[in-house]
Length: 513
Image (cartoon, rainbow, N blue to C red; front, side, top):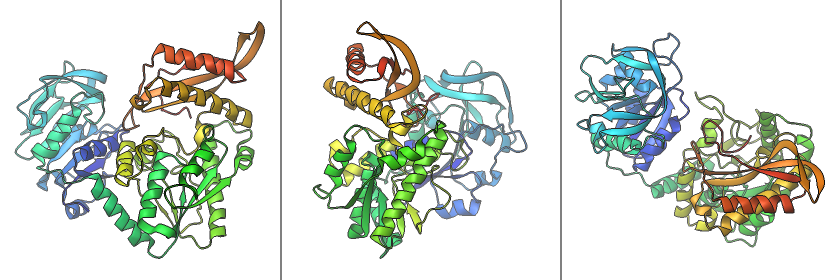
């Protein structure tokens, strides 16, 4: 698809897709593949560079994931990150051992700025570390390029062979100059020119969709969120009248959102889509009755979505393809591939085993949220829609702890509406990655109008993030939180306490379940 690309070989870490995203921020196309990818397949792709990811294993254990050491003889620059750096050392006869002192979190690292990997980086820089093993001895021909007080080889290189290792994680935002390090690898070491742009992705996607669908028909699951909206407009641009968009109101949407989605994408909207709205609130509530397990709730919602879509497809006639707005974080967090399952997304890990469609199309599967927004702007979608608040497919089902009931939905809808109003009034909405109200399953004693109450606690959340793989809790102005809290307890029946979630991701997720 592109004249130049970087390949990321996945050894099982949680941040692997972030590496691809950071490379693409350099305007260089990047794909993630399993570490077991055959050398011949790598040669056929003709990459400009290869990056080994981190991972949870110890390279010296027999069952640890490894690739062939012949990869270093292909004449392609290699960068190993964390486990990837240790793997380079191990395969080339260096020594990797359990570290006397583990390193986790933000760490000051001393770097040798003579290295092309560290060009323009401060001699002492803050990096994100996450390792219990370390490189005790670099392979022959390598020199040390960075160190910490407890990690004497935090970076190493053999410039002549184009092989580089770094113990830190340059892909995460906590590594202050990580973007510079990856850019140095892509440009200084791999010699890329940066020829991948979002317009190229949009045009190539439209072409590939047309080729795949041919004369067939497609049904798109439209939630009205950013991802499905962009997917819908992209598909419509590609196949026009062959696409039908089905919007399922499962009763777990934000306040008034069903009507808002129909106003934008329905018959009176600007996009001329074949649009069908299905009001299935009672159906979903019945299926979810009594269920409290988060994973089971997600899977119930995911399966019921599919069953509704199958029924609508039969009404339409022969439909060959089912389209979803799946994006990269959905894929990695659902544990597809080598990473651990964090949560099942209804449009990935929440799919039932049997789906009555010829094939599933996920045109945004390779993109992160900010890239999806850029694609939306490229497609001409108004900025107001592109930058609307992200909303998960399971909706408020992942923002209600415990059993889901119509009464709980009412509470969280109203609390969330008030919270969003106060955020908008304060003029800080664009500064936040995501913000919402969730309903805890905790009830506590309160006093309202001299009367004892025993009602629910609502939790407010706001995070700062660009990639939705990591996030920091936003430090909202106290007067905004105060106004929102006061209004919620006064205006929302069943709530007598409001909490603010100060937890980042990790260790938490952005959503509650």
